[in-house]
Image (tube, rainbow, N blue to C red):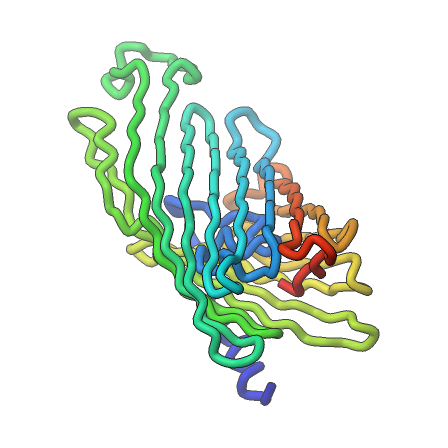
Length: 305
């Protein structure tokens, strides 16, 4: 790759990491383990069925954000198509959200190892607010006038991603259906579209080791950006060791181990440094992934990304 290509990728990573504020959808810490979580068009890109599960816990306080993710995707029609399923449950205090969606992807082969994938997903997003979990000091307060709220809305996403042997970059438009929550008669909140950007490059080293630099970002329609950049060293096709930075939060530390050609486990710790979160403890994310080969006589090698 020529020098201007490296400069373009580095510039992209820096731009993603310039500024950030809180937003409606949080950036998952396991997104660097599982690109499908950030771009649905990636479904079916492996020559195998890939299963993944992730558990994340932010801070060690009552009601802190907690989430569980599951995904599975597989290729078919000689990797020209991909399909999958994704599920997520997130709780923050009395607030709970459940997302389930199916994914379909079409692959356009440009040349050997190079392809553009287009993805479409559809499902539902359920919102629940359990007032029974609240500690209310003033029951006469007009803001506490409900026993519980729940609503279910349609979710439709579109994504596109380019991949080759060393690079990937893509965009996803999430929550295209701007549905109103309609939690009560006075509620004016609604689900709004978000944009997800992903990019990464692999630098080969000696002895089949390599370094991967990746950048992920999310923004809503008001351009409130949340992003992170992670650099990881891959040692002898066994262990990933990496670190990075998340804007408006702090540092990330990553460890991933390939137990076999099929099974890999990972852990990411978030270390808060921003003045707005330094009073909280670290965040933690545990990842488990498994490859089921399409050819029973041969287990697939885990990809570089």
